[in-house]
Image 1 (cartoon, helix red, strand yellow):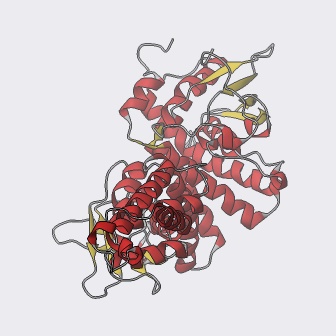
Image 2: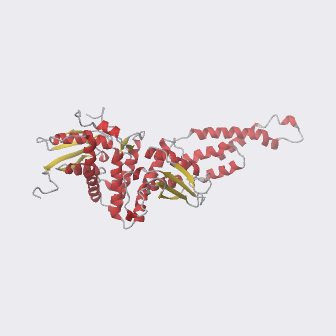
Image 3: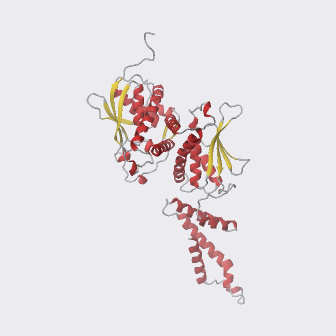
Length: 291
Length: 186
């Protein structure tokens, strides 16, 4: 008989444990399945661009789920909030989990500031596929482009993603390039923020620019990211960060703000004894504001 | 115990290229989702999944025979054992068991305890009639038809519908005579 005992039935699928992601199926099983996907879609469309769109939409759904799964499993419920971060997440983590290796290269476009390219010698999905001549520029990598678009879109970086064949000198089969063109609301610098971070973080980020300690931004990012993920019950790191803020505020108060409470005429001896009550009020106020 | 000359499912599985099961699961989910969107009727989706499985099965059998080195199966019992022990293992990485043989050995049940197609899946209320893994029944039907066995494959138990395992009933309808692609008198 198979297994030591029956598999435990879970009342709710959300209670079922996720698994380590180490299970494998044969490549040919996946290749058969993918070929059926393409063949089915061929019967549903009239032209090539529609076929690519349908493959991309199928990939988009996969990408959205892959992002959630990997953020939870590989990155401990953190998500990338910067452009460069999400691109390297796609290039290494996503590729490694889905295709077994990191992508060959990640490049920034030279002509346009908002274009990035992930290159691969041969996409896994294309391994057993040959494109007939009359289908022109059709690329089954549209499925993978859809996966990338799903990941980027749900991470807050809307983009248009397409797959292209790029002929390489000296090699018979062309390389594949996944071209990512970010939408306008995403900035062009590698440090651009995701567009779906709540405004609390944006306020803290501005303050970071004016010279406040770095971890203020870290604390509020952690807090707001977890709030939107809606997964964890409590994130202790933000409580710790809060304590640090309060201590910082007390230090700030005693060095800077206490001047306001010291009577100029009394002189230096008074500074040694800052009033306890205003200290408490001030620290509580800062603590309340940061909550 | 697998015979010495043909290879065991485990050995073949470790020698073929493999991909992450989650990519496979999510791709299959995307297919089912597309079908539900296009066809809307759950019965139609079941039929289409079966047809897709059939198309896969008629090509899968070639790879199965090539990689597993099996000799001709003596009877249907051996065939079912081959499917469960070797076939499922080398393609999906899971082992199935064969149970519930009937009196004349033409009908059996293949039981799957784990199924990589259904990770992360829950059937919504609107799709309760859907056989989510119907592609598997098409694959078995198609593969067996290519080796001259006409079968009927139905789902008996489905974990997505609340049962405790996946059970496929495979019923041998008829043995087709060997057909040669050329005429003898030409």
